[in-house]
Image (tube, rainbow, N blue to C red; front, top):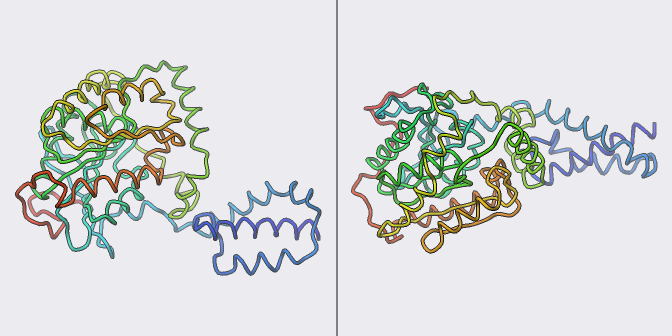
Length: 375
């Protein structure tokens, strides 16, 4: 009997901690969390040694209970097309030179004059752990355009060069026709493509680049080591915020994507995109393009020498940040990175930021009649 009481003591303790931390996906009862904890911890139980022995089995049972209880808590539903209290989401196929670009156009309720294009990393898609970033941008009054890069997600085209650059430049031009000010966030490969598109003349008012490698040189063995290092680096308390929005199984499933369809390998693609060359081109612009560069101190894909190379290229014209606690995988979902970037974009895209506003009408509805709408 004491063993059973001890087991349920620990289960209720884990549940109470999840409740206090606001991690709904790890919580199987909010209303009863503290009363059950108080009740069971008054009952006779095993020694502290017994508590230690049963800690792991109790944690496993707790996670099973929480997963079953929160099976409907799927954060990806926040990105389904529809009208919500604070936003509207429309699924679009944007016209581009090499074929339609699948996109989600997300507009704050009441409209806005500023929008942000988001380009994802290699092997991901437009919704890959994007719900928290979208929430942060919408909260700051910015519309969002999530797109699938060529060869990823719903895109019908393979990853190819230079077509991939055009398929980022054209959505930027689409936004420029509808908003007074346009910014962008590019992650890793998406950042490399975005930087090249801007260097080649794509119009934009501000750009944030996250963890973009200057180049990639990884053989099969090195790539396996990188995967192990990144898997270890992402195991940290900072990532528990994901469970505020989703149950364990849904947070894990959000990792699943369609993979990459390519006519050019990712390593070769980085070579032809020439990230250092793109940054040198941006550095020569006058007036200077507001540029934010954010890198991770525990990044196994962009090691310290590569990050230092980018910092040197940014010196004197761009804003550079190195977040020591983040890794390549965790940076795009780290709350510090999200706040840093979205606050910066809000300042750059506000009416009084100093750059000249483009002539365009204030957008009121997210669904343009001239473009194919799906979903």
